[in-house]
Image 1 (cartoon, rainbow, N blue to C red):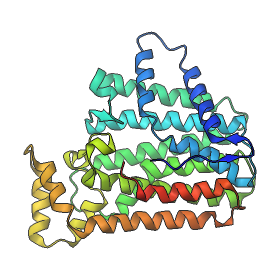
Image 2 (image 1 turned 90 degrees about the vertical axis):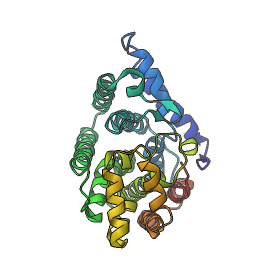
Image 3 (image 1 turned 120 degrees about the vertical axis):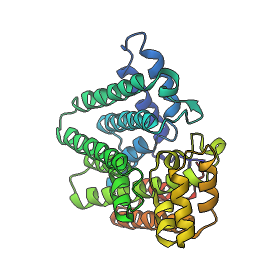
Image 4 (image 1 turned 120 degrees about the horizontal axis):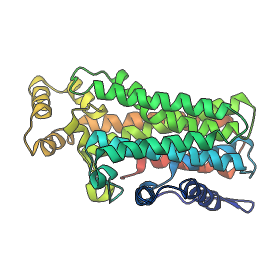
Length: 328
């Protein structure tokens, strides 16, 4: 389960997140009738609302006082729109049928509708962000979406590259996942303070949490249970996308086991995903990947050591620790 939200001097994060949901719904209230059911359906994909929560908590923690502004709420909504767009597009790329225990948009209405819906979400995100007075927010959102798209493209072009290095993998997951979580923390801090040391500390925190989150996601793709995780698993294996557990296995396993993994990844056998999971799960590669994720979490927590003590800072630490403890 997600760690409980905190209350600071009468300001609840629950109320702020409710405001985020409200703004999201108002942005799409005028959508054409055929589109509205798809907008309603993606509400199933919100889940933990990690990124909006990080915008709000970073804003609070920057000064150690309870002050959530309208800017924070808008920025939190913007990052959630972009995140949902990436999920819709990811499901197309992965041919996924289930997301958070609900049917994916591509499964319901096909790839074309899913791609267009993802584009619509991104367009609304930029339109909403442009309503803020400072253009620095829009520039950061634009830079971040560039990184996300590049990361997805690099990963796509790296499919079935059995020589993919750990450094390249880390660069991919920073772009496709870490950059948006880093931006969420940076945006929250920017809306609260001009202290660059505080802003950079929270950005480093976000980067570490984002990297750890994706590594654990990739571990769960191999070790997780679909019923617990709540989405299609084995998609990395099926698509020939090497993740950290597979990269480590290929680098450390003896030649027969290395060749076996490559043969399974290149196979079209219907049970190849189960065979790959059974091959990697007992190896040291899972523990190694979890250790790297924990290192990222440790770096994230260390980064915010400069922040003033507050309940929000405690919550950020708890959220970072939760990343490596989760099973979904």
